[in-house]
Image (cartoon, rainbow over all chains, first blue to last red; front, top):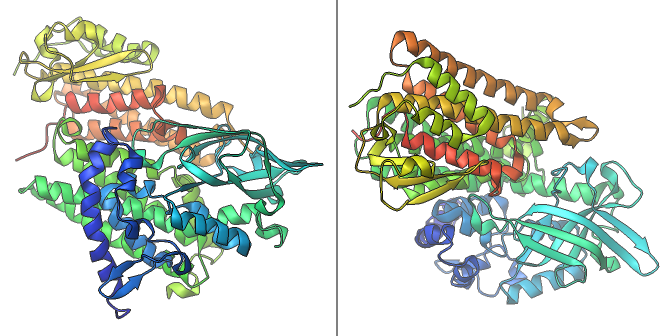
Length: 390
Length: 204
């Protein structure tokens, strides 16, 4: 397969799976079928799409070429396409987890080997717990503590709005080392869900129901030494670094999912409204152009990550524009289908509800605006690999 | 299409009721000046408190939408023809209910802190509240002016209310995405706007 046509071929292959995703989108949203059952019915090759090559003996195939989706610039294509089908199911896929990125970045080889070996053989979920009920994801105010006594490390605290938290067999928890303050006292800890003192409960959301948002409680949960990640590294490259670096890497993916939903709403209107007034056609054309623009911005942010020079501000801008587009496209689609559209077009109503959810992933719009501004003002917006650095 | 003549003070009072007492009480107050048939909206649908819904249909509800103060029921009703005056009254009420939701959001942000600062003091948060105030202000001003000038610019009024609703909803952060009192009220307001929209665009 030539590099030149690779993105188009990935898009075409995943597009076929996306059409399958669409078939269960409404039944899963309405609770008529269980998320876990839908996930287990998916092809193993698709479920494993993001696993490293050494842990994946059944990769997706493009012709005779195996496809291991390890680059962000390819991952965003997969995420956009699958989210066009059903963003909820995209988020329900066990291995498309934030936790995997932190494991790759911060865990030692033994933990990484153990983590991926287990996932390769079982459809298990993992989670990534940052947000707290009273402080959101503000690292300075984080209250979940990691303390040490004679027997080892202990976690106490509560996390909320954690994707796949109640389904996860393991997860990464961001904690504050007891007695510290400020962002440098944070640690990221791998916790098994069978550990005594850990409890979880699902939260009912208005959309993106496959995401499985949950509340997690850690009541004197004990963890072994090597589950506190990044201890061999510098203190500045541990807990908060893990979170912020992961967010920088993952924001293009969240943007891609929002873009997929925007495209789904656009295509829905095109299918339902054969004739449009001039004003309506102009509005649709504006949405179409923004889809292309947002996709380009996401691709630029993803290329920077793949080149090892991620631009947090550019990733923020990509997520910002995609979330705005998803909101505008779904709101406009409802308008174009007239009064009672939410009642008469339940799939479009679901797209609208799903689009709302991206606002809360990896930082809200105001955070992204501030990140983009800060990067732009300090000449860190365009990193060299984007080809756009002045 | 029936158009019931309503003094503007009745609309004003209905909005204030929505702010202070919630959607159900406001719709019940608004309905005092309307015949039952006027309370049916687009596509022969009615979204009302149970006490009002009984006046227009015996059909089983097709949906129930909890709010922060009770519940609105959705049903199909053969009777009725989407009286423009009733739909205008619902626009007034939706403004009041968004203001009610906004009070709840800003109270919460006054209690929450980012570092040592109350969240409500953050410039970007205050800017959002300013946007909401401007959109609601414009919608109200247009509805007030319509009392003298006739029809309000429907698309603009609806857009203002919907933008204010969406921005207010976001002020709740991730908690607004969980099924709970604020998201229930916001969701009900969104559907109410569809059933009784004063804008009537759509299929050619």
